[in-house]
Image 1 (cartoon, one colour):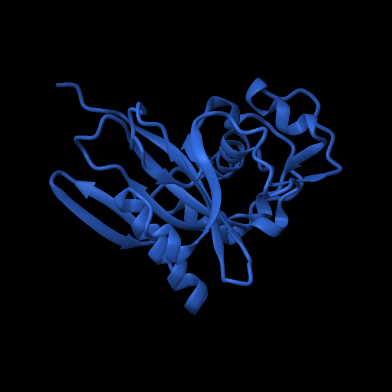
Image 2 (image 1 turned 90 degrees about the vertical axis):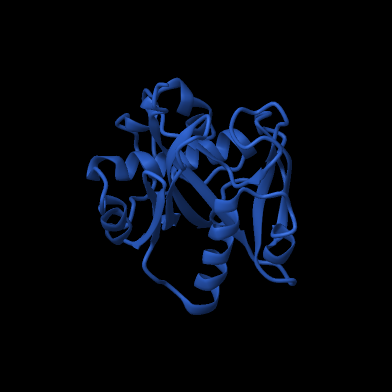
Length: 221
């Protein structure tokens, strides 16, 4: 049996203030999806070749975030992973984490629609909060980096999902307690608990969930 390759990936958690407390944006994967069918997840996906392109940014990824992303990882992946989080958010929800004023020039096709809005990625709006590798035995495996961004930094209407692709259905903002009642992957439950802890206690080291054979490990980055 061939071993499933592990692909680098990025996921983004948008936090939105509301009178009832913080809310997150989630959507449901389709029933026929190969990976995590029917589960409610945050927007995200695999790193694409387009994310490695020489793209103009409106703001740059903070040095501290780059340093944490580079721990036990190839440093050259840090900025492409941050771009991937913003691209996946835009593709799957229509939400644009960008700022105006940066000319695009020639950009890869996967990024064209984003730059056509007159925007460039707002990398400074991202914080790195979690990393997890999919266990063996799954149909697909990812080394996923989870980022958090403030919905107030969006250049789009946070309630308008008309430009979203069809990968996620039932896109909606949900409070953290209500999110836990949804049908979630295990790792999403763990990430929600991490977000809760950060909101209550402030910044902390980044948990890294990985596997060695049949054993799972947590380490802090």
